[in-house]
Length: 439
Image: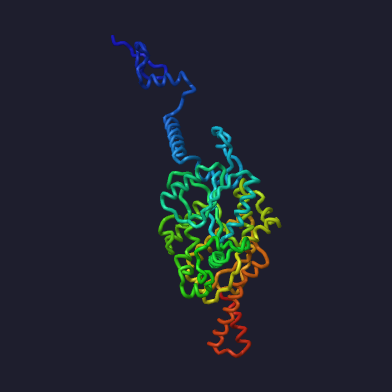
């Protein structure tokens, strides 16, 4: 007689009617269910198991990318920079050998004749006050470097005691290209024509720090070159007053590539890209006080209290010694030619100025630089309203652009009226009103 098959307590036939074999049940569905039922805390579905494995995979990949990237994601660093507070990594990471402020590596590749000597004077005071390492260079006239020179300089900078701020007249260096940690960059630029003229006369006659200062900087300059009239230099297209010598500001942000020294769209666009990706702040000398305010906000470990030092009368006495002397006024025709030759410089300058003003508005700062209503942008650049640093004599010197504009405005108006043969004063007033409302 056929034996009746035993029923499983959970329903259905028992897969082992004679009992489980020695050594435990072989892997199977029934055994898996019995083990899970005996361990209620391990109950989970296949979907839960898949979710756990996916989470583990994401965590492992994130850890791998974290280590390959050399640290936390950039947006975390930016967040820490703006908020000024510690992050989770600070409190839960391994204890560092030395607590360093963020960022601990700052490079100020200062553009010549853009207030850099004033800022360096401030940095010397601030480094003693806040205890950071100010690293300067005695090399002032070598901004373009070979590949080996770049590697050597990056190595020297990277091995400096942190936190450091390195400053030198040098075109942008890509540290990551040579395996180094990319530092935070800062810089200041100014109106290109004003910068050129300040440099032109500084090379010849120096500043108020000493009568023989210019002789030391340019000992081989011949007398006829030293006293060369600025108008002749521009109108006769001397090398000093033409491209590529006039293409000066953009290479500081474009970098060491040979094409960065060629006036054109490629260098301009690369300079803009580096400003966006590698520079914490690029300020405008015409608004130097606002630049110092933002530097104090972004880099308090370096620039805390900088504005009060800058406004101190004793510092102003030292700063006034760096003002360029013996500036003369070029003709309207010469300025017009300069402006045309420096069109890429002006496009970059206005781009940086716009970004700087956007940053100021973000922090509630209003621009105090006013623009005269009758200054056509296509003809002549905006003059400086402030200088590095400001004093009465320098302000008088910086009125040269206003005088040029007024003279040129009068000449242009007379020529325009003559061509129209206007005799009525009412017609003249109408023409003036039209010119004043032309953008």
